[in-house]
Length: 287
Image (cartoon, rainbow, N blue to C red):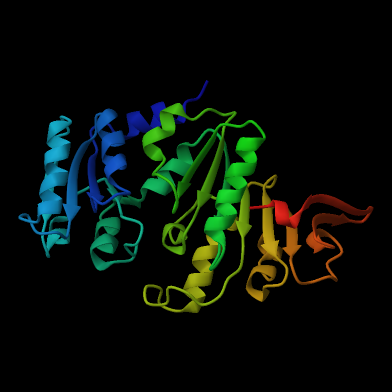
């Protein structure tokens, strides 16, 4: 049987790997890559004498993880000659240093992108300008109540790549995905949910359209058997429906005219279809 993890292990053998940023999200990544025998250089903008960085380095040394380091204000000046580069989530993928390394043949990726490529389980991905954390949490709790082993991650919970060896095909993975994580994503979850889209994070994104395009990556690479759940009451999300490859399901709290999809109906969450309306659960029981 084809094993993606074994293939990835073979792929990184002998590769020069850079990990940009040694914060919370990338520390488990470094541990995971170390278990696979990777040789890494860690990059971080903190100064060499910074006590936080000092503790991080000491922790890795105590665990027997040997790393080369490039730190300080000019830490990216040494980003040259790598085969595989992991960026930290909020780092723009089009930084000049990353663009130059990509032009030299490096693969630029992230912990979440590799996790989604290797994950053997069904994935639910949730994004949106508001409500994504609540929605992600509720979906994970519902799946747990249904008896599944659930892994919660992305922009919430813990980084999951470090746990990939424990995840089975019968498990469920629920991911909260930010626009920063989605910007360079070329893999979409089996089930994607977009709660809404409105102007946000424009201090990082070049403009509103770039922000929308980042969000859109959650659906562009779905399989034809995938499912996309969209807010019918939000213009930006509703307009994405024609770009879906699989099934589209709409929901709305406010649009009573929605004839097919999920609606609030007399205090109940109800599913409407061509054959009628089915009440699922009282809305006040969802918490």
